[in-house]
Image (cartoon, rainbow over all chains, first blue to last red; front, side, top):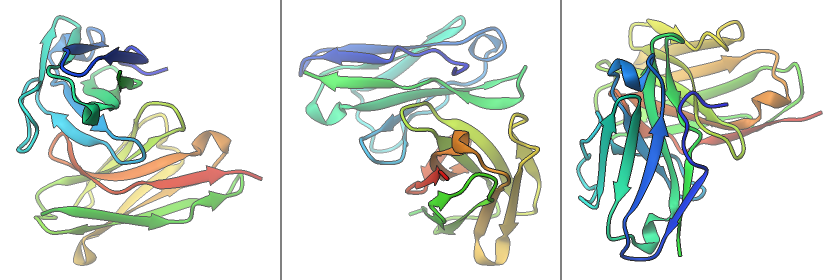
Amino acid sequence: QSVLTQPPSVSGAPGQRVTISCTGSSSNIGAGFDVHWYQQLPGTAPKLLIYRNNNRPSGVPDRFSASRSGTSASLAITGLQAEDEADYHCQSYDSSLSVGVFGGGTKLTVL
Amino acid sequence: QVQLQQWGAGLLKPSETLSLTCAVYGGSFTGYYWSWLRQPPGKGLEWIAEINHSGSTNYNPSLMRRVTISVDTSKKQFSLRLDSVTAADTAVYYCARVAPPFDYWGQGTLVTVSS
């Protein structure tokens, strides 16, 4: 059972916009700790997609954006492309557990 | 360009010891913490431990009784040891640089625990 809760799957057609939610609690996201997002293509290691809530590393398209509010965060992908089909993971820090924590991952299917 | 390359045994029997090593190529080794994480089949990621160049460590409390992380700064390598493995330890294990967050990752090593 992951500390952060993500939907197991989302889907969208090419060109559409999808969002992936990440729900935490008052000891992690709600406490103001940064949220990061990773993209994991099939059979590969995770890749940093968004850091410190809404910052994109060099090379990540601006189709990817993120936001946060209260005890939740969300990742938005606009102009969906086939190459976006992957698992997406959110990550934060939990002060009660004193560890970095992850969501269970969301599988994005491009229809 | 920073690259992490990891290696170690992929098949273990219950009660054996898991041992993995990660080598860092490119970039600074001394300016960061270096972590191990794992991902059981079909599940989410779990942080295991981290270490810096001087040997300062942090462990996931849920695993710390069985985990040892170590570093060899001269070789720019760090290692993971997990004692008394069980089937529940079957996972893909990753090494990663802690920026924070985890900005560079190794390729992953599938470790299967089976009798």
